[in-house]
Amino acid sequence: MKSWVAAFVTCLALFNAPEMAFAHAASTSYLVVQLPADDAPVDVRWDLSLHDIAWSVFIDANYDGDVTGQEVQDARPAIGPAVLRQISLRRGGATCTVSVVDFALAVRSEQNFLSVAMQAVCPKRGAVSVGGPLFMSGDASQRVLLSAVRGEVQLTGVMSAAEPVWNEPAQVSAWGSFVRFIGEGVWHVLIGYDHIAFVLLLLLPSVMRPVDGKWQGAPGLRQVARDMFTIITAFTIAHSTTLALAVTGTVKLPIQPIEIAIAVSIAVAGAVNLFPRLTRWRLPLAFGFGFVHGFGFANALSEIDAGGTSLLPLLGGFNIGVELAQLGIVAVVLPMIYAMRTTRWYANGVLPLGSCALGMAGVVWLLQRV
Image 1 (cartoon, helix red, strand yellow):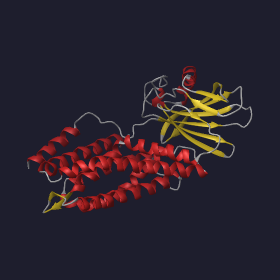
Image 2 (cartoon, rainbow, N blue to C red):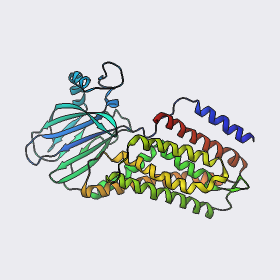
Image 3 (cartoon, rainbow, N blue to C red):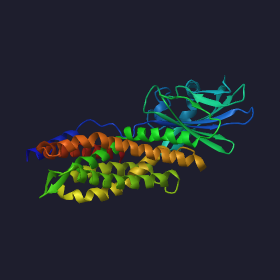
Image 4 (cartoon, rainbow, N blue to C red):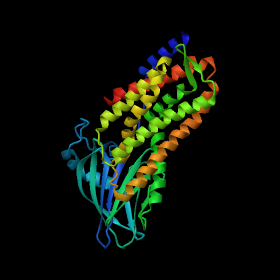
């Protein structure tokens, strides 16, 4: 009884705690580059989150939180120089002169972006490289997704604070894209607090078995491994399916309902863990909510203008990166909770308190997203 009282008090404290960090906090901008075959200027379009540039350029003149096209035009004298200080292009090893052509508001991922059209005049022909601070300010969570078009060939790339330069390859490398997006898949799990929370909620009861309405430690590792393998496989199949469907454009859903459903999945999984008799629902919940989490991952990739042969290594690499990150979480957490499974304080403390804490995090995220 005392453990349930402690769990209830902890849940109340979490519910009344200050607002938690929003999941998937990475900030993303989008660069589209037209690579000419001759001496023509290099055309660039850079879509920037208004939130990112608000730290460098003030646009919202009436402080209402809603940036209009007129406010963008009024801030033009400040926007142009600020943007040009953040990006540089080189071609054939020589520095190009970049100028701003126009501004406009654009909608990406159901959010307002400032779309900046630019041209780069280059003194030499050759391979193009793009780099600069890119409004990342050393923030490891930020990414610039690049799509470059060279004739009939589409190239993709990702720039970060650690690797802020993209160099045009001589040939399209499917292997290079594959390897790079493995890293991006791992990274998006690590910064996706909601996804980590859901995986942990699947893990916590995996070392326990319901006996007479109470949790008891599982008798052996083989049973635990079989249970965990079944649930993680179901979750993986589900989110891999919707990730592929969404990124290829086969199915497209609004972002906000997906983010709300992800938060709901965490709250529900946390509640299920508090009642041993509901353990039979863990597998269908993992499979069902896996579809939802797949759409969440797809939001990180859906804005990359990739097609044809470039899409397969991108999608395959990202998905494998997600699975590697999940397995990493399992490899770290499962041995620890397996060692604790027979202790009274795991069944009456760690499991209910951990489930309650993570479930309430889902409730907080749900309230933020509604």
